[in-house]
Amino acid sequence: FAYVNRGVLLLRTEFKNDFEAAECFKKATEEFDLPAGMYFYGNMLVYGAGGIKKEVEKGVELLIKAAAEGIGEAYFKLGSIYEEGAEGFVKDVIIARYFYESCEQADIFNHSLHSDNIFWTPE
Image (cartoon, rainbow, N blue to C red):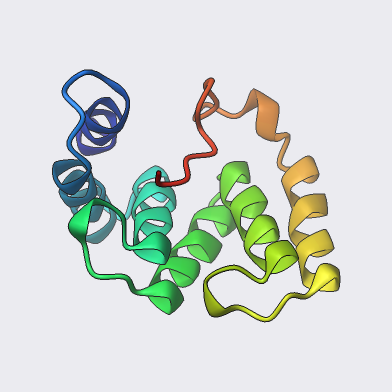
């Protein structure tokens, strides 16, 4: 979990470095299969944040895996992607609603990842 914590610090503090944060989340995902890493790394891949190559499909796949592992924030992000038709996805309010309802069932506001800025979107 140290890679996830370091990545979050690199995203949200005066030591901001999106590229290094992405590398931390990538390690947390690929080496340790951590759902929190999947959420953050997937999010960064969707938007190509931190100077990493934009890989929307892979990012959404990671968000779906993170959601399946209980990361409610991933359901929320997926809902917003489909609600807005973001990043090349066809706008689909039925799918968006499914993800938002799943988010509620995951009790997002009591999840351990929750903080003031968990719904991270790149600037």
